[in-house]
Length: 582
Image (cartoon, rainbow, N blue to C red):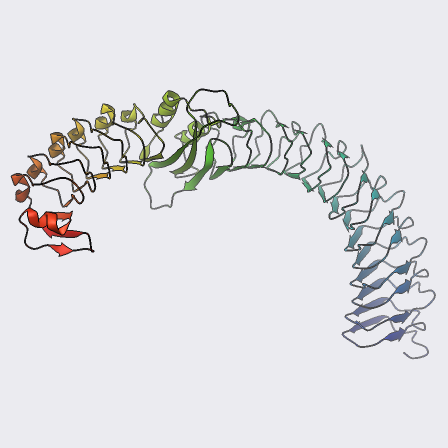
């Protein structure tokens, strides 16, 4: 540089291979920006420079930096200087407003004389073990730290701090913040710290609180009243209780991996809570009656959860529910319908029998675990079905009478599917006045209740692999709107009631592999709408003469069986299946 560079006020260097830079004569420099000078190992600065206001150093190999004479610095940024081990700062620097430090090897940093600092960011300084803050930092509004070896942090003088972000401070065991005067603090994020207690009683204006992987935290003191708190995220495995009674305006609560949390106290009325997420905690009960505008509910792996209290109407705003990992449901999911679907709801239940209920091992009631999929147009639901399903209970012990009443009490249900270890069909199915499709699959039921014949709007009835089913209701023909009847692999079924010939709208009648069925009703020819008949694998040796009145009827079966009926034009679908037309 020139011997005298008194007029130079701004210097910017980037992507050079300079190894040394002498700026001793540049005493009036105001802005210095050196970036991506990866070979720079020596920087000679003036001993004193009262004019320099902004200094940025990035990606250099400097080991030391002397800024003692730079008392009027306003902005200082040192980043990616991974060899920097010594930084000499002025004892007092009242003009410095913003200081950013990252990826250095500094072990100590003394900022006691920096009382007007407004923003401090220290990131990836993995050797920093000591940070001295001013006794009083009334101007400090934002502090971000990512310093794995820092053990203590004293912020008692930072009474006007608005945003505090401390993460990956894995050795931090002590955090001192103003107990009664943190009225300005709006956002607090603490991650991977080791402190055991956190006192936030004075943080009455906090809007966002995020405690992530604070694995040693056992005590959290919240303000008596937190009217500004809108978002709270906790991941604190050792925390046992959480008191949020004063957080009446909370909008989002996310509690995960709180493996010892047994008590959660919400406000008497959480009028603003829209999202509630609970994962891996030990809560036994949840009261959704306190959250009237909830639109998203996620509960995962809360194995101790026994009861969800959900009064009718409390989920009228809900658009998403996921419930999994509890004893009762694995999982319970709600899928909003697409706009082109009708207004009726759907329920699909897959039941698995359990030997024991982990929550009530001595209970004698039957034990079931369900996979539940419920579909309904949301959030305009007014049926109360979700509340009924969630309030049924979450342990495996199942009172079958109560279970039957819960299912049959659902409103506007258009489709019901029951699969698995279900031994009894709900007795009051006739209460499901809107039901159009009913399916039983792989159940162990032996008969269908007569009430099923009262489903005046039923269009589809399916019985799939119900191996123990022995008989159908004699009045099945009262299902006057039925269009499709499927009896698949009902291997103990022997008799098809003659009343089915009264189903004037029946289009499809399938009974493949009902091996003990030997004949069809003689008046089957009355089914003028019948288009498909599948008798593959049955014991039917002859067809009723009336069936030949159904011109165009498609019959599925084995080739040899169809030919034994006298059909000559038989076509193959596959090696084992053929078809013909009347």
